[in-house]
Amino acid sequence: MLVYCATTNPGKLREFQLAFQGSGVTLENLPSLAQIPAPDENGATFGENAALKAVYYSQHAPGLVFADDSGLEVDALEKQPGVYSARYAGLHASDDDNNRLVLEKMRGISDRAARFVCAVALASTGRLLQIFTGVVEGVLLDAPRGSNGFGYDPLFYYPPFSCSFGEAPLERKMQVSHRSQALRAMLAYLQTGASSGSTQSSFSHR
Image (tube, rainbow, N blue to C red; front, side):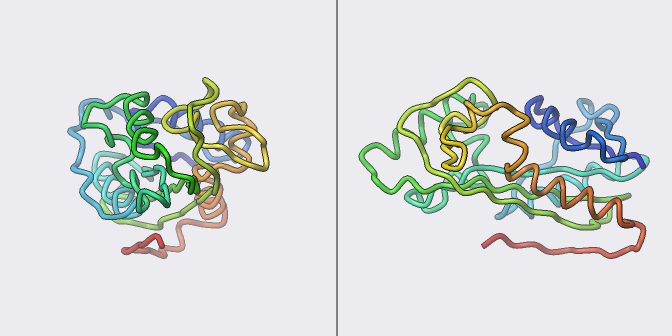
């Protein structure tokens, strides 16, 4: 079985490829993805954004397509950055820019509870098939630690590992991460027969 992914994020693509290893499902990036105008990510939730991207890109694909939307929720910031995680410090902000802004807003705040959330949506020829989710709980650090991963990984301390996701090797991070949880659920769905035709047209997180 062949499945296309719709991402231009090299960090996400590495994680997708690792998750698909040994699954029996072949992963390819969507052909000509760079030439397809990106849709507006105007959903209120990760699930809504993942679904609109998957449905949109599936109209440009010869088969199954999945897209993800993911990010960081910080309790003390009323679950910001949330769906704005990739552009928290501005439309063209870098990972460092976003990390600095989160740390600035968290200065002096003792409640450091945070989580990574991921929604992966699977679609075919403009039709949403299913949405899969993953959540991992952690603690926001006072400063970045580690050069592995991407996004907010260096700020996200995972107590069971006694280190940040930025310090954890990718293979170890993928044992527990929000994205790996959602991808494993999607692969299980594909392996047990996505052709059954079940669909899901709405989604909410929390």
